[in-house]
Length: 433
Image (tube, rainbow, N blue to C red; front, side):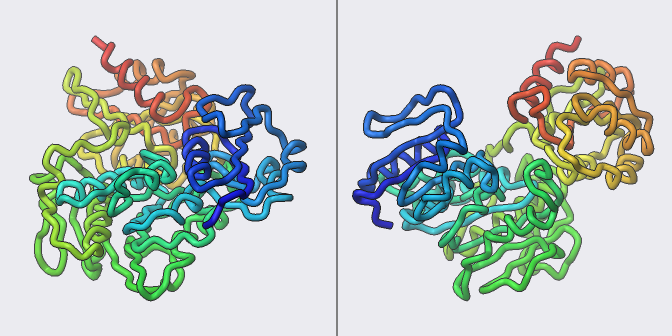
């Protein structure tokens, strides 16, 4: 992609926008950054910045290339306006990928992307192969491609938002972890969300590899297909949650060799190992998990108090993640759930709740409506805030139980993000006495 003398407009002044601007400058472009914020900082003097961007302003902007940051709705009025006089429209991931010369493993799915992305990177790094976790997690890809030397491999977490704006993007290995309804506040239908994620396979050909969870609703895929499963022994990679099996032999003992637990993490491990196997080198699997601690806010044990475990699963921002966390529990559960209203149907969780939980507490914007649903399965209390939820859950949890904080929806009604929400939960639990 030749940009010398070309005009590049970047929509979004966050980290990915800054990285895209730096890369575009390196390639000789004339760069202008637009953002709806009242002030824009962090750019070199060679970049022209325009705060207070609007659809009205966007309709007047002419550029050879428009680069859209993933946090901005691709189909919203702002992008539509800026696209009117743009020669081409892509996202930051697509733009940066055109300058990467190594091996690409891209990971998508409703849940488990970050853990799988981290495991892939760790497997390569421990085995002496340079790899950077990036994309929707870690660094923006535009930062990575400017590194010297460029890594041999990228472990690229790819969200539906990023996949909406691809054009030529073609990973050597595309990993499909799972799919469940999510982001219904951005997508008009479940089908449109599914279609956005399916774009990860769009440009793959006979030389490409797709690593997919067996039983997923996928079209016929090009190239080699490798499956993993915790439910079917007919897959290439299988697990019962205790061991990982491949080609008729045990290749990893999950409980002895890792600190990861649960069927959902066994799937993440299998997907990562299957993807790394396609690089074509012999790899030491066990070494990759020595000292590895999974990302926070994912069924993270905060503390045990009065015989009750407190688990922080704030990353559970949808029903599928909530179900995965519940399914993995072996102790009686008092569930804390709630947050922003995203238009999701929570009734499918009721049978599982009846099996795993003894009580539930709901909080936040969705507290009342979610409480009505969960009450059909277990006794449920409705409260306003997270601190109230913790105190209430503690009163309901007998010795030997687990208080599982797995919200099942996003956090933006009361928090800046799931990290802020999880950190707050951790701090409140640590203050209990």
